Image (cartoon, rainbow over all chains, first blue to last red; front, side, top):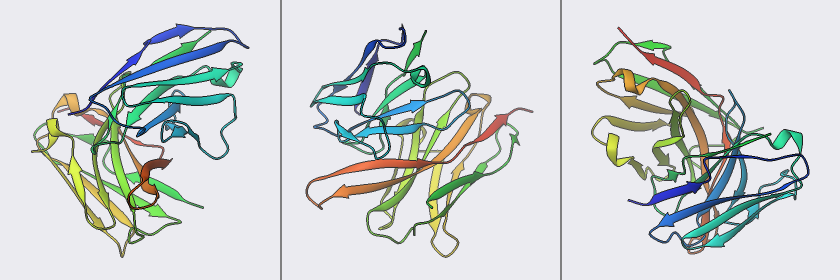
Length: 106
Length: 126
């Protein structure tokens, strides 16, 4: 089984900040990683897939990087709508595995 | 417009079987590389991938629930059905289906899970 370790579990930030969330995979997953944003009571929204490919319609302040075992999601210039929970997902080996989530709060 | 929508019972008794249906529109379950995944989220907890099925009938289940899960598709109805047997209160969660498809070539591709339903909340209680 592939294990995904996401950190931090929560963080405090302000509008305009640069925020970085990390996911570590064990074992390697190549670039088969997606990032999702989830607001309370809502379905997750795909932000990035393939480690770094921005989903259509997602603002460019979101970016993903990394490969194999270490991945990051960066939000450059946090906006009020970005205070949310973020999840990583590995799809190198199905069924996929989600990280435990990161709550970004004010 | 591509949509997926879950339906099923709100309340299930312990030891019963939970059966959920995902109805899709805007794409076909026969389309090459196309599939549907089921995910659940207990209240206040993280997302958990349960199962998936693709157009070639390739499917699998999360190891911890493999013996209790079953997934199937009815292409004529554009539906994917998930069953979870012998439910317990710990299975109380919002169950969500999502479209998953292969982006890229057959030898260099990524899975994209881009369209999600709103989910259906299921409570297991006597």
